[in-house]
Length: 73
Image (cartoon, rainbow, N blue to C red; front, side, top):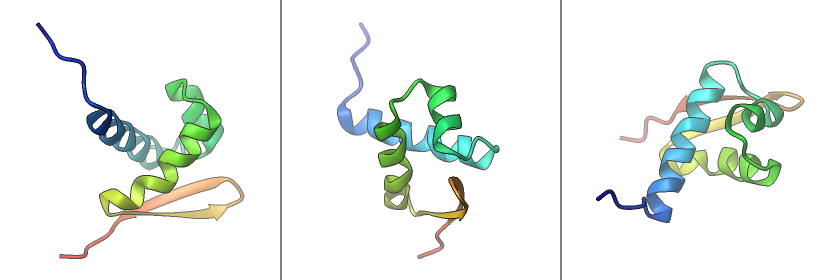
């Protein structure tokens, strides 16, 4: 029997997926929405929450994002 992932696990995996998408060029909210099927607000909130994974996200063109790993070690 497989257990359903917890909300924390789901949130973590969603953030990883969005970080990967941004890194591979799907770096706008509409592109993230198309790739994942997420509602707009979920995609926006997930992008904002990437800093909790030590990934700094910046908006460099209107509506386009890029990220870098934060090296706070």
